[in-house]
Amino acid sequence: MPFLLGLFLFLVGISGVALIVFPNVVPFSLSLWDAASSSTSQRFVLIGAAIVTPVVLAYSAFAYWILRGKTPEKGWGE
Picture 1: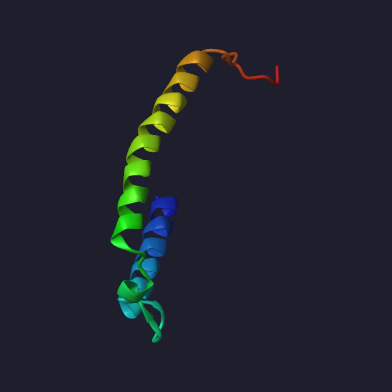
Picture 2: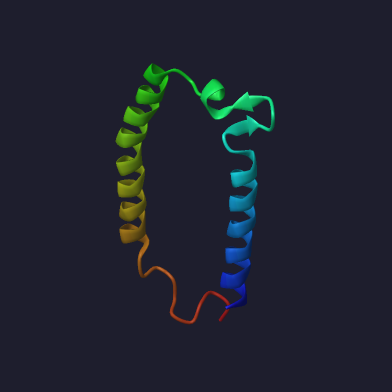
């Protein structure tokens, strides 16, 4: 419970800071819209992330499947 409350407090703090400075990325000087890259480069990154993310998830699942059950039940210390 203390961990969850600490996590909640952290998220509330970050949210408060984000609400105070929104839409400024650099407070009082650079807005979110001025700092954004062109829509073409954002599309490129979106397509790249859509291709790479399933590959990373599939590799992680494959590694988990291959290495399952390799650890002794009582651990390595005994």
